[in-house]
Image 1 (cartoon, protein in one colour):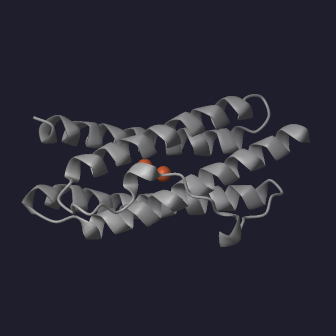
Image 2: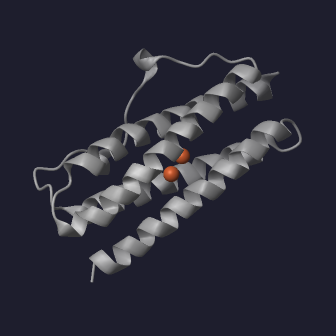
Length: 150
Ligand SMILES: [Fe+2]
Ligand SMILES: [Fe+2]
């Protein structure tokens, strides 16, 4: 039972990470300016829909295993690098912020996958799928960074 609560608590953390990602990917996909920003904006716009989907899947699983999906009063933000900049052509800092957010998600899904081992295979399966998608997001932006930092 204690393990179940630990899994719920970690799913809620993952849920908030996805929600914060949605907020900041929306703002950055709109705020950025310039020719160099176009591909980044397009890619973020696609990822937003996937991250919303992740949040919904996590919320559904939280409910299924006996938890309660939190409301906005419980939210505390942490994504420093993705806050709006005065320089709206600073694409590199946004790419770095995205990589940091994706790394955070990857780390956290790995944690839940290990936590679920031997107790909750459905949550484990969900987090393995989400992990795969975050790794896809990350490698795309790692590729962008190579080009933009030349
Ligand atoms: Fe996600
Ligand atoms: Fe992602």
